[in-house]
Figure 1 (cartoon, one colour):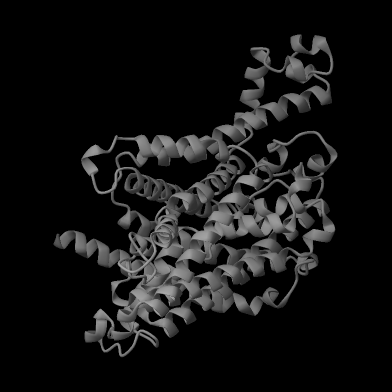
Figure 2 (figure 1 turned 90 degrees about the vertical axis):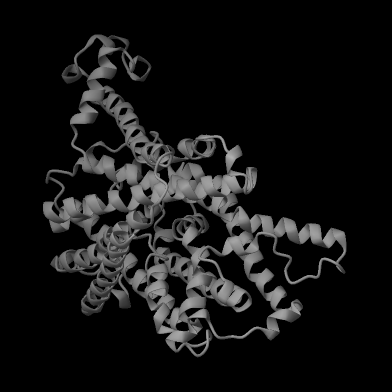
Length: 507
């Protein structure tokens, strides 16, 4: 049941949503933009992300208040149909809270924004899932075959990945607690090894003290990597922009806590702690790894740890210690594989729920009719003779049983729709660089524009203006600077797209 979902669990899930493979690009961003400039960008993005996360959370409260106030109004599609949990009291009390951000958009902003948000979310998540699949397959191939590309078996990486992530993508978040906790611990271990390994290497490696601290971009008048290098601003900004993105998952994360009023009030603190943790990870990893690898820092820093010995001299170091550090380095090398196994099911689950919330009730009704037609709901009926009746003649209890079964099948279908196509597409798609830039446009809308519009529309609802989550971030005057940041971010992404198109034409 939902009782297993505690505040600690919420913290773990939030971290797993936020910490994608993008964390591996932070040291490269620090090496290109300088420690001071990159730190300012990351901290600024983290603060703005917290504000927009809280706006979505407040919009959830206003949405529920609106539903309670207008109880006789036509409920949304997802709240009428989405019933995939059991019949125990705790789950039943939470079922009425089943909605996604797409429901908030439709309720407060209307159909136009609803279509824009749905399209943006689909583009962002589909391309993201495809990228995660490719990252896993790349790490899997490097681990199994090394540099011998001729020995690879076509589709084996995708098959192994699918065996793990497809079952996880179809179950509820509270049923993934143990798996996500283990993967989160593995993620913490890998980040700790990268940070600690860089620090140890800085201390033990005598050659590092003889290196010039100027970057390869010194021709652009960058004096030191420890200050600012504005020629690397684009790299740092694009890396940091989506490093704290989980606004689209807020309703699903909070849902299991809706029946626990004492815990629900602490949700803002948990989200703040999650963003503070990830921001600290980014700063620590970026500074330590870039300090050691400097101009040799790769765009994905785990590649720097292939054969990494933590600054030890292999000729004078004990064999057991060398074996230990090589094992630790291999943990970092396979970090992307562990990371994608954690985040892929969460993203597929969220995307599937949004698909389901966006669809009409026709599908669930059609499934209900097919279940009755083929006698697949007999064990759920309260009366044996109900199997021979039409749906309209069933008791309310039996109707609920049929609709619940149909809803479960529909939810499963949409989550598979979200998870399977990226796995299949990764068999043929090899270069995602341009697609990721296009997804960046969608990401700016999902992460920044949509929450700002929600805050404006829902916050002006009079009686709904102040919620239990009210705080300094609730001030509507903050909408203008967030909108300005989102517009600037969109401009930066579009500039990169134009540059990529120009490069394609040149080549």
